[in-house]
Image 1: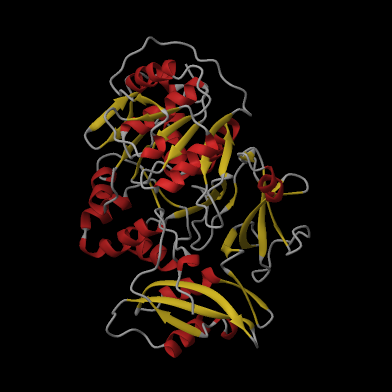
Image 2: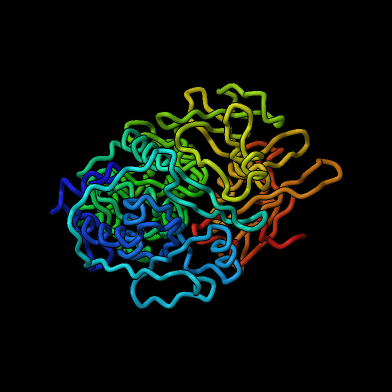
Length: 482
């Protein structure tokens, strides 16, 4: 039936997808996706209105069966951003649930309603070449209009098969998550991952600790989440014994899309006996590294390179490689492997700039590497690497230290120009008690005691909340200036 999803043909009665009280077996999924795929014959690209529903999953599987690249659309995107994506990717059909009211930016596209109850006779679908595009996924666009990363089919299969190895992922696993389906985390890892293995996924629709407890307590074995979700879990654990029990019985707890604060790692481990493992990936690369299921879930690290993926750290010149083992040797992560995107759609200039000689992709993420190969990300090159007093300092370790202070609820760290130091460290704090925020000198001493004096914040600014995107990442460029 499909080299991507062999279970569509071999295990028709196995549960495949569940969203709330709606579900599909593999046989039902094969029938519904097959019927829609037949309607996509001749399409160049298919936009998918990526709501957290069965329809989105069926639509994406149908596009992959038909060999039509899927363009996931964030339903919360504004009209201007949607118009840019549609103009740039030029889909000729949009897939959505019947009756969906779509914004004007999509009004000129042919509409194909996704009928999850449709039936179609089984058929063999020709498998496109591994280099053929599977997805065009748009980046967040923090430095300009969103760019469409073209992900080939080999990137999807190689990543999911590498995670099978790293996480000991089998068809017996049942994954639960509440992630959005317009990002690679929720869609490719969280929906296509279980389907490629022949397992099943239970999507929460909307994340809640009650939903996590219910699903992990009734047969689910794995949980995917982002740090904001795990923070809510850590906060809820003392008052929710059923959540403690459910997490304690899980086979694997995985966090991604941003760094999970060490404080939350330790609170979850202390309450449940289970450690969250982290992995590292990007839209352009899918997954690069992960803590292995049989490895040490070391807080603050994203593990080791996945099978087939090469990872190196380089100096500021982008060429000289930094050897592993020096915890102060910060370098930019560059990756190479079958997991990489092929191009930014219609942007040959941006594509060329993204790669170094030898096919190494410049991630823009800064890290150090432990002697045993574990990678510790310290932040983005553009926003999280602070050069102060002759030191290269990663914002992430300072944020972790600040979050250990009982008076700090949220923390972000940036740099700003300083005539003496080059850059001074600025801490942005959401206090646990807005009426009695911790004093700046108290926080500076707290950091200096845990890390080093040169890593203490020189300026502290207080906020009611940190700006975050829909995946929970702190948007440092949106912090107020001065």
